[in-house]
Length: 346
Ligand SMILES: [Zn+2]
Image (tube, helix red, strand yellow):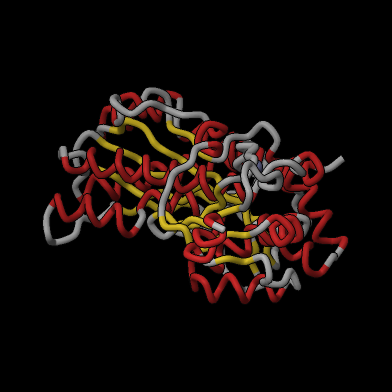
């Protein structure tokens, strides 16, 4: 049976008298509900875990760069077609990345360009051409790589990426599309400003959270959007896609630091498990409270919770009302923070 059913308690059972919607640095999450900690599959937990992981990445990369280190954005993709099974393409993507970051050629690049390791996020979208798994990574170097060496390095990475794809039975893809490498740029305001900018604009969020945001265009959807669409439209094809995604991602990590890198960059920051992060109350500004009857109606619509969080992030209270009305959940059990506080005193 589907993970949808296994997730019945998570993000559903209330721990107290209401569920709160809390916004922390632009990211919305639910508070006061049970959690499961599954990053790939649970809209409720994924929002919290990705936000935290994103902050960690921003912190690590910011510190590294302010200490004179280099940071480079890499995107690795494979060409895809409507007929490709996600299990197959995701497998090739993962194996090819492993090949890119190991072996003699990698060791040579480590010495030549000062490569320390990478943080990678595996992302999956679905569009007109079928499943599109891809990797966004930050590759860290001991010092900045100068322009000539950067071209050399890119050439090597691109060629090795292409060869790895072929080795695992895929087509080599197109130069310029299959692999990209860009320096993480510093603002003119200097290093301190850069670090602040990373926190604000969300460098970490960029790689940790892009599959949550996705685009609103129906031509390309994230799996959580597919789940949300199934909740509203009930199309069997969407449910099939979701099940395929569940199977393909089982046991795979969505976000991974290469060995030793986290200890090197964040030696003073304890590493928490996804489950611990999901269960933690992170605080922030409470936007609204949902009373049990409204909360449970919302929680029973697949994908509706994720739609609520997206709407709150972009339009706040008004976005929240729009989504609740759109799902026909109604707003009678919706309380603003001051209304909730008054009610508690009655
Ligand atoms: Zn969960």
